[in-house]
Image (cartoon, rainbow, N blue to C red; front, side, top):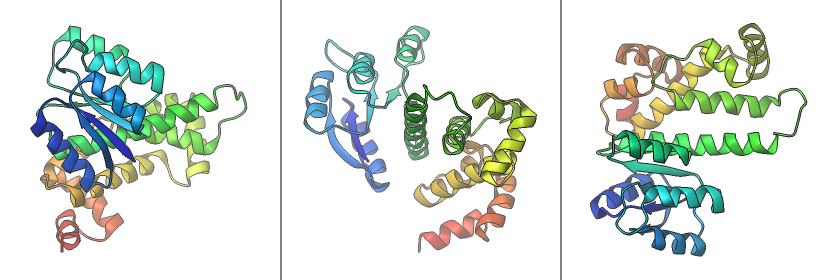
Length: 244
């Protein structure tokens, strides 16, 4: 997976590169302006672009976001320290795949990147199947649910929310999902939370309590209970073993 970083703060760009390369991503380039980004994209097209909203020059990151959406169809993640409504509204119109807010933690970058990849896959499959009026395609529908859960990991996820994602009522959704996935929707959500938690436990140094919160568990104890069932170890012992 190739990633282009567009960031004019060198230390921030360096930090992003280190986090992403440790995850196995290839950094195609580190550039500081919209103009240089377009040159880089035309040389080696990335799979994802991480771009700062505030860039030096006549064009900013939101201008580049428009180009990425209209000309290249490349998913992008905004990096921002802005909190004012005007900037946020400008950014929102371009439909970014995720946001990273400065100052960020390693966990923020990992979650945003995973979310952007999942959202992009989901949108592409929806677009390709937009003319298909037949019954739901199981694989595609499960990916829609996966994308929704990943986008709302730290929220309370209700059965009605998942049903709405695939256009079914709650009763039919529960029956359909269990038939396709082999487990109940609630169990699937827990599995996804645990997958992301396991990734963060192994690949970051974030406190376990913070990981529990970020992945939607009510507290560290709840995460530990489910984690032990799936991985046969507590999160602390699992991290220690993986780091040996």
